[in-house]
Image (cartoon, rainbow, N blue to C red; front, side, top):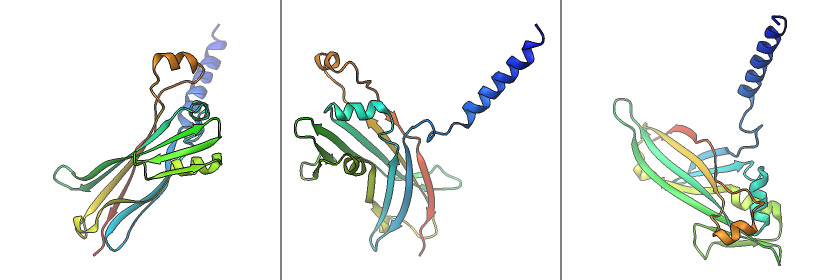
Length: 193
């Protein structure tokens, strides 16, 4: 009996170490990637991507079933202060929704609920890029940032699958529903003069 205990303990330790080394990327969890913070003459801008946003089968199934699926990007900018609480300068959400017309096989991507910002495509790869790539997002006016101060930009994303009425839940029983969130991504920077 004592012959098997060390092996079992070793197996438990090995399994525990394997679980600790699994990264979100390996588990196909979406994550914020390729973050660039830059400026124009007037504004602070951010560029970023949500990698593996469609890696989970449940997200792909919801979209391909024609269910509207919303990505909500959460953005916060704080001034980092040493001896006081950090000061929140900007906080907002950007929403994008994708819906497939299953008859015409056309994806419609709407940004921010604005009917004027609608893009359509029949290409699945392009539709994914339109949902996950955020380019030139205006965060705040440079006039609001003081030189030589430290600032923290926090980005995260939520993939919100639709809340269906009971009748549709029965019809789409095979599509697992539930929200998916990325870990917050933080970057600190200083404004130069």
